[in-house]
Length: 115
Image (cartoon, rainbow, N blue to C red; front, side, top):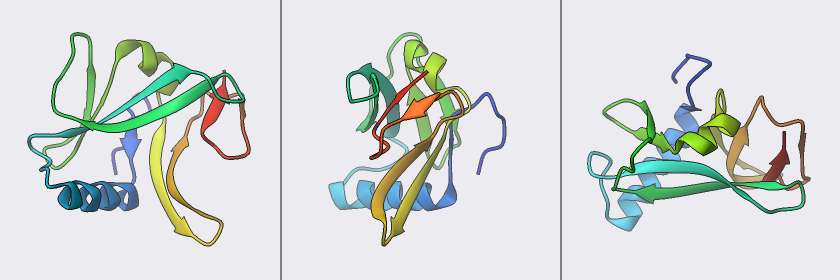
Protein backbone atom coordinates (compact mmCIF):
# COMPACT_ATOMS: atom_id res chain seq x y z
CA UNK A 1 0.00 0.00 0.00
CA UNK A 2 1.18 3.53 -0.73
CA UNK A 3 1.80 5.80 2.25
CA UNK A 4 2.06 9.45 1.18
CA UNK A 5 -0.99 11.27 2.62
CA UNK A 6 -1.20 13.63 -0.38
CA UNK A 7 -1.73 10.65 -2.69
CA UNK A 8 -4.80 8.70 -3.53
CA UNK A 9 -3.90 5.23 -2.30
CA UNK A 10 -5.31 1.76 -2.83
CA UNK A 11 -5.25 -1.05 -0.29
CA UNK A 12 -3.88 -4.46 -1.16
CA UNK A 13 -7.40 -5.93 -0.99
CA UNK A 14 -8.76 -3.32 -3.42
CA UNK A 15 -5.74 -3.77 -5.70
CA UNK A 16 -6.36 -7.52 -5.81
CA UNK A 17 -10.05 -7.02 -6.66
CA UNK A 18 -9.18 -4.51 -9.40
CA UNK A 19 -6.76 -7.00 -10.96
CA UNK A 20 -9.45 -9.70 -10.82
CA UNK A 21 -12.01 -7.41 -12.49
CA UNK A 22 -9.49 -6.39 -15.16
CA UNK A 23 -8.71 -10.02 -15.88
CA UNK A 24 -12.42 -10.85 -16.15
CA UNK A 25 -12.88 -7.92 -18.55
CA UNK A 26 -9.91 -9.02 -20.65
CA UNK A 27 -7.84 -5.88 -20.05
CA UNK A 28 -4.34 -5.56 -18.60
CA UNK A 29 -2.89 -3.19 -16.01
CA UNK A 30 -0.01 -1.84 -18.13
CA UNK A 31 -2.49 -0.63 -20.76
CA UNK A 32 -5.34 0.38 -18.42
CA UNK A 33 -5.58 2.15 -15.09
CA UNK A 34 -8.21 2.94 -12.49
CA UNK A 35 -9.77 6.37 -12.91
CA UNK A 36 -11.35 7.89 -9.81
CA UNK A 37 -13.30 11.10 -9.73
CA UNK A 38 -16.07 13.15 -8.20
CA UNK A 39 -19.24 14.54 -9.74
CA UNK A 40 -22.21 16.45 -8.37
CA UNK A 41 -25.17 14.40 -7.19
CA UNK A 42 -26.23 11.87 -4.61
CA UNK A 43 -27.99 12.50 -1.33
CA UNK A 44 -24.97 14.29 0.18
CA UNK A 45 -24.09 16.47 -2.81
CA UNK A 46 -21.08 14.74 -4.41
CA UNK A 47 -20.68 11.18 -5.70
CA UNK A 48 -17.61 9.06 -6.28
CA UNK A 49 -16.73 7.70 -9.71
CA UNK A 50 -14.61 4.61 -10.33
CA UNK A 51 -13.86 3.13 -13.74
CA UNK A 52 -11.18 1.62 -15.95
CA UNK A 53 -9.59 3.91 -18.53
CA UNK A 54 -6.68 3.81 -20.96
CA UNK A 55 -6.48 7.44 -22.06
CA UNK A 56 -4.85 10.11 -19.95
CA UNK A 57 -6.24 13.63 -20.02
CA UNK A 58 -4.35 16.92 -19.67
CA UNK A 59 -3.91 17.73 -15.98
CA UNK A 60 -4.41 14.17 -14.74
CA UNK A 61 -2.77 13.27 -11.45
CA UNK A 62 -1.17 9.79 -11.48
CA UNK A 63 -0.61 7.63 -8.39
CA UNK A 64 0.40 4.03 -7.81
CA UNK A 65 3.14 1.98 -9.42
CA UNK A 66 3.85 -0.14 -12.48
CA UNK A 67 1.46 -2.85 -11.22
CA UNK A 68 -1.55 -0.54 -10.97
CA UNK A 69 -1.99 3.16 -11.59
CA UNK A 70 -4.75 5.30 -10.07
CA UNK A 71 -5.53 8.42 -12.11
CA UNK A 72 -7.61 11.43 -11.09
CA UNK A 73 -8.41 14.73 -12.77
CA UNK A 74 -7.20 17.86 -10.96
CA UNK A 75 -10.68 19.10 -9.99
CA UNK A 76 -11.62 15.77 -8.40
CA UNK A 77 -8.24 15.57 -6.67
CA UNK A 78 -9.15 18.64 -4.63
CA UNK A 79 -11.90 16.52 -3.03
CA UNK A 80 -9.99 13.21 -2.99
CA UNK A 81 -6.53 14.24 -1.74
CA UNK A 82 -5.50 11.73 0.93
CA UNK A 83 -8.29 9.27 0.08
CA UNK A 84 -7.77 5.54 0.37
CA UNK A 85 -9.63 3.15 -1.93
CA UNK A 86 -10.52 -0.08 -0.13
CA UNK A 87 -12.60 -3.16 -0.94
CA UNK A 88 -14.93 -4.99 1.42
CA UNK A 89 -16.37 -8.44 0.86
CA UNK A 90 -17.97 -8.84 4.28
CA UNK A 91 -21.52 -9.69 5.26
CA UNK A 92 -22.44 -6.02 5.71
CA UNK A 93 -21.89 -5.22 2.06
CA UNK A 94 -19.52 -5.84 -0.78
CA UNK A 95 -17.81 -3.27 -2.89
CA UNK A 96 -15.25 -0.54 -3.15
CA UNK A 97 -15.12 2.06 -0.38
CA UNK A 98 -13.61 5.53 -0.51
CA UNK A 99 -12.07 6.41 2.86
CA UNK A 100 -11.98 10.17 2.39
CA UNK A 101 -10.52 12.38 5.14
CA UNK A 102 -11.98 15.46 3.41
CA UNK A 103 -15.62 14.34 3.71
CA UNK A 104 -17.54 16.22 6.38
CA UNK A 105 -20.56 13.96 5.94
CA UNK A 106 -21.41 10.82 4.00
CA UNK A 107 -24.65 9.11 3.12
CA UNK A 108 -25.61 5.76 4.60
CA UNK A 109 -24.60 3.81 1.50
CA UNK A 110 -21.19 5.52 1.27
CA UNK A 111 -21.61 6.50 -2.37
CA UNK A 112 -21.95 10.23 -1.80
CA UNK A 113 -20.36 12.80 0.47
CA UNK A 114 -20.07 16.49 1.29
CA UNK A 115 -17.07 18.64 2.17
